[in-house]
Amino acid sequence: MASSPLINQPWLKYLPLCIRRRVEGQVYLQNVVGNTAWQFGDQILRMGVGLLVGIWLARYLGPEQFGLFSYALAFTALFTAIAGLGMDDIVVRDVVRAPEKRYEILGTAFGLRMVSGAISFMVAMVVIVLLRPEDTLSHWLVGIVAAGSLFHGFFIIEFWFHSQVQAKYMVMAKGSAFFLCALVKVGMILMELPLIAFAWVTLLEVILGAFGLIAVYLSKAERLSLWRWRYQAAAKMLRDSWPLMLSAVVIMIYLRIDQILLGELAGNEAVGIYSVAVRLSEVWYFIPAAIYWSVYPAIVEAKGISEELFYERLQKLYRLMVFSSYALALPVVFVAQWLVPFLFGEAYGQAGVMLGVLIWSNVFVSLEMARSSFLTVMNWTRMYLVTVVLGCLLNIALNLWLIPIYGGIGAAVASLVAYWFAAHGSCFLFRQLRPTGRMLSSALVNPRFW
Image (spheres, one colour):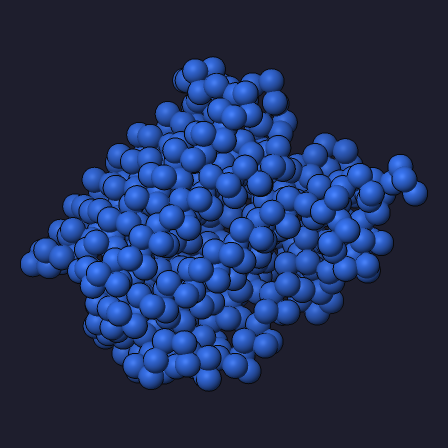
């Protein structure tokens, strides 16, 4: 027993006995669980602190100003997706496949992200001025938050650690920035500072996170000076990633278009109430994200070993994603209408019903994230783009139809239907994706922990 991999992993002794028995002797699974545990621990702390600060901020600002701040964040997110260039999975995939070329991959990705970040910042500023020409406060809020795109090149380091299944270093870097800025927000609330001050703190968190990642990267005896730009590598990376970039933009549109359309059709106060439901539903996205980034490198490797192992691991990932989503959605549905007014106050009471609807979208967000691993490994990124475009168009159409009639509840229903269609329903429209659709259906009716 002393030589068991279970004993050699100290953190495993804190897991429930049933889980320890499942992972004993399985080095791959132990790495996945350990990496996921780091991300879970970080995100659970973020969720707790972020929720407390978010509640305090929402109460302090009130639905009108909180709605305007949420509108600015949602608007900026549309253009942040451009800065990302959709290369997250591509960088991880390429480093896993060719670790000897890691400096070329990282350097090229860094250069591309710095250029795209500057472009996305300028485009965001032009669009907000055209959309709200007289709203100077919105211009400032969007400009400050969007300036974070200028630092996104350094977040390439994050994908290096993902490729090495070493989440703890990202946790230390980005978590420190988050907690420091959370304390700053609390201080600003106590000092009763104006809305625009909180936009500056949002930018500060991005900057501190970037420098934190640089620090932990250097601490691993790596050097930024070894990064190299290669035109051929950039061309290949863009060929592989442009469908994912457009997909990321489209995903941000159908993740945030509900808040933007709600702001234009129903006003900032409606956005403020709806944003509470969105935040309470999206705060759990760290669960599928942590699972995904822990499993993705192994799925890439499995493809090179055998088709059987590849699809076996995919099915396990789909079932695990659904299992975790069901485990979350069921209890939230029963407490949502009591929980929201208790936490945020009666002014946000209507968000309880919206949360009861939106929480089910986590099931399909998780499945879409898991399915993207399959499409990226197969290099079917164009197919991924088509499915999310269809989901986006459906979301826009449903929001335009339902918001004037039902307000925020209509936006919640529109989002849920669109998420389902993009992740699951759209698979059955294309012959190549029908086997994947059947695998997702199996996961929906037979979820499992592993």
